Length: 513
Image (cartoon, rainbow, N blue to C red; front, top):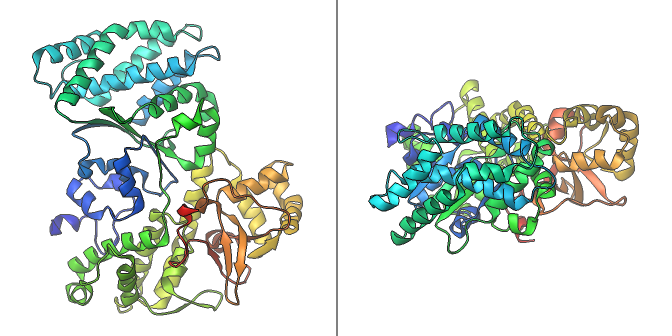
């Protein structure tokens, strides 16, 4: 595998690609996937929803199906245009008078048709196979059709029946799908899986890749959430893994007809510093083994599955202290982590950037020089903030303008009154709103502003919303602070560095609170 992995782990990207969809070799995917964390263990509980921010690893956890071996059969639905077409068609034929259960039933019929198309390739019992083929034939699905083709067939059927029809025609559509034949096919599919003690899973990648205006397709998504929430029970043999962007979580929660049921089997992807360090150490060892074999011999005894030994690995290649742009001495790993929002993609981008700077400057490659770390972080700060703002654009389209206008006017630590003043002088015009609460909520929700929870001689400790299981609540008595990523990009004011809670390895696991 050594030569194969060099396509992904190399001197240009020592920590590998940040998008798992670039990795097509399943063996490589498994070798780069960090499996010694709480979230991976939670996959054994068969969550139906994987909820996480952009860069949290949703696609990686979706695709871990290739090597975790909990399922024998699966299909991956990743064609955004056809899925959007299905959503829009369902929305056009539903109305306020249509129950979510009816829309969920339509989703079941549509998605299970792809399951039947895949299973007929594996069923050997002629009677069972005939039932599946009879239903698929009525739906116009042919033997040689790919899953994408099956989806397009379903989408075309839905769109054709939605044209010129009044809303509320779902019952007619279900008749077109031949509900009796569908139930027969579903029964035979489940019987096949049950007798062979095997499971099937539908993989549906994140809606943050789809061009959707949630409000305009709310009823269709409401039914989809109900369908997803009904699966993955103890006795089910057909499961689903559906990724949702947590940036839009509150929007999906709002449209859900029953959040307690729809979101009851949810895996929330939230990382802590030790887990990120282990992820980085795992890839660093692979890089050293392939490109710095002599140096690798001195550190190969360190295990990436242990966070303390992973930290020792980074300490072996980093200087003990660096002097940040404010002239304050810091340890390298906490410095790097405080410039993330505790997302794997952020951490890997920063590490790749630091190593790339070291290569360009011609410094002795190992150990790295402190300037490599400072310049490497600075080089990608804007890229990281842009990605954050892009992820929130569907619900906060004015966030970037607000950051550009308002953050330069604020120190690293400021009062509630300071924020109100900046809102009056700059925030109203930038946000095109007169609502201070909405302005503050936006800055907190994107992770640009947090609540001060402590201060030492050397730094400010801040709590940000991405490390709490709910909305971060602030009062008029609270002091607030700017996240280092946003102050680095949008402000040049000096001051003590802000350390977001969770960016220090000794911080408690915020997921236990």
